[in-house]
Amino acid sequence: MANTKDPTRERIFIESLALLESKGLAGFSMRNLADRLHIKAPSLYKHVEGRDEIIAEIQAYGIKEFGQAIASANKSKRAKALAYRKWAILNPHLYEVTLRTPLLRHRLPAGLEDSVTKMIIGITGKDHEHARAVWALMHGLVDLEIAGRFPENANLDKTWTRAIQMLSQ
Image (cartoon, rainbow, N blue to C red; front, side, top):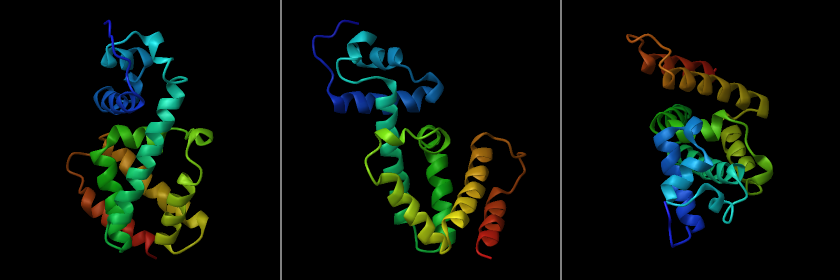
């Protein structure tokens, strides 16, 4: 486990993402990260304050990636909703740390969350409360889908189509 070369912040972040993808948030520990970096866990604290600092960095990355996925989708509400679904399904562990756990807001870059929130409000064309309700519906569908809670024969494409129709009323 000895390592003669200290890890860089970039390498810590890259290995943090890889650890998240391989073990999920439940398996994300400083000890596991140190093992990936071939250093002892206490040595990590020479480079970062702790787990929250790394999680906040991952959350910031996830918010940016999520925002880009939504922004790059066709302008229709349907395309934006399906982009949400696709991003979450393709990135279940990043989705979990970004959209399912409390945000470490005091550690995020200023304005980051607000910029994505404003984009979502703009897509819905309504107020903040409506946008929250839309998010809750999409979030619930994605959570249930990722958790495998729908029956095997459920037509989730049709369910999403129905949900999007409901949102457009």
